[in-house]
Image (cartoon, rainbow, N blue to C red):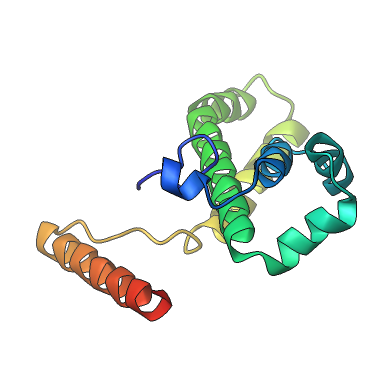
Length: 149
């Protein structure tokens, strides 16, 4: 998946759509600061940041892109930790672990499996179908661009 636009990787043209104050506020929000903290960093009133978040399409789009980037970063980190977590669960389910701890580990694994499978869409393993999905996605993107252009 391609990178989402953020203040750090937006092109010059895209970056020009935000004022310097908006860029400061966006950077603060993307770093996890509150609206009040972002407003202070940008030198504006917090109601101004709220107005940007509610009424400025360019600001909202950049904010959404920054949020998507953060979600992708977190998901990637969690996936990297999964191997360690599985090894720990294996240890907890060993014969030297008290029965109540093993039972709790089993409950956690089964509960997670029951809720997670089916939540994440996994694409086709067939290259022809993947190519068709990519083509379909590109067409939809072009149509969407035409509708907003």
